[in-house]
Image (cartoon, rainbow, N blue to C red; front, side):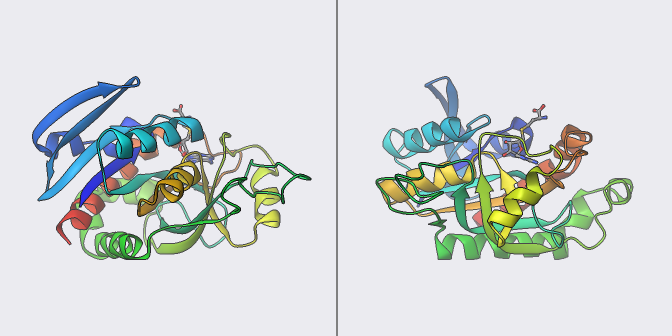
Length: 249
Ligand code: SAH
């Protein structure tokens, strides 16, 4: 396995580059790709930046130029379900582009060429990622998140969910926006801006992939308020610890 690890924001991959043994950095298409050994795994780490095109470009380059055989995306997302709380973890079973609409030529959400609207993640890779996430909740969280931060963000009983994630080129936080998405896609657990783009590229190139997201906000009017604070103090240590458990599993 040669694993490509993508995040949108630097904080979502904080500490990872430093953890790479024998790192070698190569810049291509305005992004830095760092290759090396990550806890025994042959890995390539890269920041895609925000949005579907950025994520698709990064995933395709990882496969075509850096010859990765598997891809994982790790980052944060907004909750789209009343039972999914800030500090919870969502591992995607499938992903959809919620802003894609070529109707009436094609059914709503369907991606022409693939004939699909939902792109399924790799079962084995997602299982391994969910295992790492659950282990983190049970054994890691208390060691890497301070009691004050737990209190600030009410991270008392975080849970891991598995299901549908939707991506689009919008930060979801305007009144009614998430309610509308949930009404159209009742199984929806979380919203973000990259996962489904990586999913389409991996489907088209035949690459197994997984997406794991820490819930940073409720995708409502408060979504942007504490966003960066949360990403730095919570999502960063979550991602580092979970990826370490994933690689060592
Ligand atoms: N305010 C931030 C904007 C980041 S965009 C800034 O100043 O940098 C949000 C990023 O987190 C995207 O990469 C997306 O995948 C994820 N995300 C988290 N919450 C989201 C939400 N409510 N809607 C859409 N994307 C969200």
